[in-house]
Every structure is written in structure tokens, then in C-alpha cells.
Length: 152
Image (cartoon, rainbow, N blue to C red; front, side, top):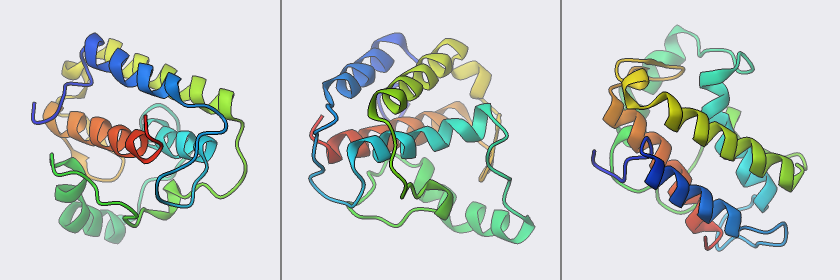
């Protein structure tokens, strides 16, 4: 694994402990989202795996995502501050902090319990088939980026 392995209980719990450091009053060090919106934003990745809430990209958009965005999202290279995000990840409405925190923690735990073998070769909503390392990098890097955004 290029980054800490989110599929292990130890790393998952470390991330969850960072989430639990957040408070409804936590302020971002950069960006426009409040803390509840950020938690909801982080849930979108998991919603694409565990729900049918988000439609899959059409053929052209899927091709573009695989060709241009995939290597950026699944690599071990950190996201820059204030990077652009896909429209589906934009959370502009108000969210309830405790509910979003609980939802994100449950998604992380569910993913950890399933383990890396359940994800090795699994189709991504946006990027096609990913190996376990690519899934790990995507999950961990995104969570780490936004927890750093809020100083956790």
C-alpha cells in the first residue's frame, strides 16, 4: 500500500479518532465547506459504493474521468488545497453535524470489515476497475485531506 492501509482496523480507527476530534464549531483552515458539509462530502465516495443515490457517469464522462482524473485520484500524491471537485461532491445545503459524522464513521467501518480483498478488482462508480491499493489511496487520501482541512 502506498498510503496507510484504511482496510486495517488500526488505520481505520486512527481516522475515526480524528473524525471524533471534530466539533460542530470546527473551522476550516481553507475552503468553503463547514464541518458538517465536509463530512457529507466525504460520504459521497461511500454512497457511490453502497447506495444507488448517484447515477453513473455517461459513456463520454466516464471516459474522461478514467483518462484524466483517475490517476490523480487514486495515486498517493496528496490533493492540493482548494482543488476542484466533481459536481456530485459539492455539498451546498446545510447538514446535521452528528448525523453526518455517524454516517461517515459507519461507512469507514463497513469498508474496513469488508476488507481490501472485497475491493481488489471492484468497479468504481467513476473510474472502472480498481485494485485494492487504488481503492485504499482514494479512500485514505480523501479523508486525510479533509481532516487536515479542519485541523484533525
